[in-house]
Length: 68
Image (spheres, rainbow, N blue to C red):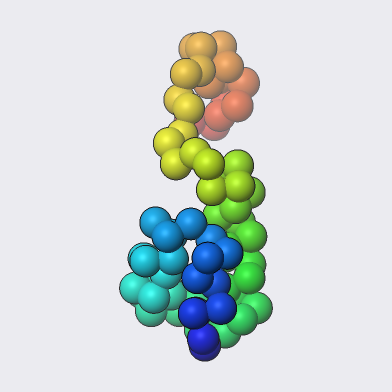
């Protein structure tokens, strides 16, 4: 799979780690890479945020995670 097509399309921070991540997790074709990057894009608000906001109230935690 030619990852150089992604250079300049995704942030360098992500691009520089992509080969190792794809090897480690078996992301070995374009469909898997597309799904992976699509999920990363969604979860990071377009590669703009990389930290999870864990500012939940106690009540919100019970509501969101009632079985834990």
